[in-house]
Length: 630
Image (cartoon, rainbow, N blue to C red; front, side, top):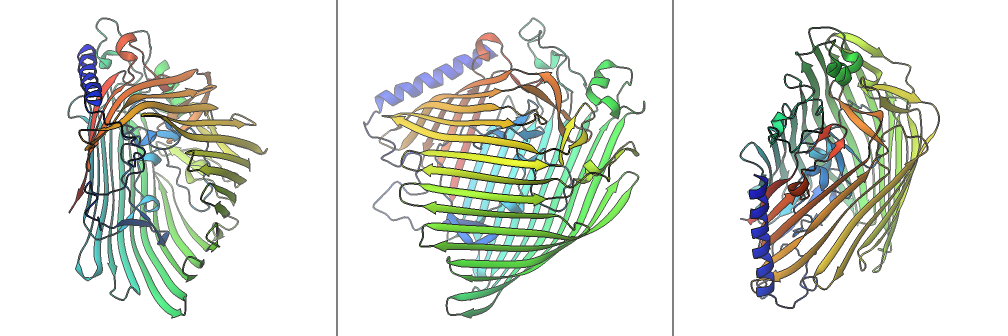
């Protein structure tokens, strides 16, 4: 099978290279807009009057054009690989993941303790609301090894008469996996139905978001010495810790009604009233009914969670009824000031314990601009009632010229520990009850420099935290350090080009005064590729190699019982992955062909981001995306 994959990939790439030489035009793709091409028609004599702008719920006044990203990292279809830095995961697409870059939760208020599926979620914070004059359909599909492993993405937006518009964002990840008992199934959908009055003084939006994840857990492989041996060609033959019955389900839902009313206008000033009503539901459950408390493998996997012979189960859920009312005063882009109150009635439930909370937060924001060069933003969130003492304060300053942009941010926060850090139970029995945990407190500053002409971006982050909560041991129990922990991270993004050859690199280095997190100090990903337009400039093509490197000091593992990554204290070396890819685009249709882990075709190499959670070796993957207008 691997030989067939290699031969087919080689043929495709050879034909592509032949086309590149046969159709050579001598034109620079960058000069033609390569990498910065927008959704424009090929016929430059016919103006494109299409409008595709989008904004986010937290700032409907600020809109950006929805541009076609062309082939920029198109072959990086996995959500855990799409950003400047990757997420560590358990070897299967859609599995639980955690960011390589250290990121603490700075938002005050309720924390339900479930964030291991963050890169896959469609939530109100990252949902795009479109302002458009033509329907938008953006479809993507990538299968692998048959019909049981695929990823589907779809965006749809359309305006109707009488100021009504519909917006939908959908994602489905289905991975049965290649080892026993590691299947994942994720379904995420975000939708919004918007009404805007004819005089644009009243806006009503109803939104619904749902993120459901089903995942099986095999505890990792028992040995890495069998790869490539006779009778072990199929990865299902590789023995794993747990072959059945260990599975979890996470559910997240958000139904909201948003209202915006223009109260008054005086000259260039306007005053707007805002109201939001939300019903939010989150739940997580895990079960494994086939365990042996005396088995070394189960003890290694579950640790002190093994409290009885009947199996392991954990469950918790949170329901919220939330109301926000506020006002916003603004004068175009010059200045905008907002303030409001957000009340939440919270119901937390475990198998044997229920408790209710009331949270009230005062929110305020400021956004202003000076001389078109300086932008200032600040936000304040102050907790009351059951969350009294919580706060987060942030500010951002950006100075822009035609040559560069310098920006800086500052955050200070104090927040209540998550509900699963304060209390947790297994099989209906309290495993820990820690009301004495102090509220984590911290500050974070960052500075960045962007130079568009050289395609350079540099960022420096520095944070100091006290009362920090971390996790260790197979039980992934939350522990708290009273000393201040300092974290420094340095990121570089650089794009280079010579003739038709391009080189892109993203580099991350981070250090900790005390290693409590098990995150890698060094990682980078880069790609070297050839880019050109062929077939009379009708096709844009990229052919290249993509490499990822992660350097570890110690390994992380994952406890599905309480949905936490934790440090193991064990040595763990490095992760190296080489992919060879071919991307091409014709009009609004594009395709990628990628041979993942190309070295595995020759030496049966397997990689792992977490000890014992190896990936699936070398695989061929195809992906298509089609942007449809009308």
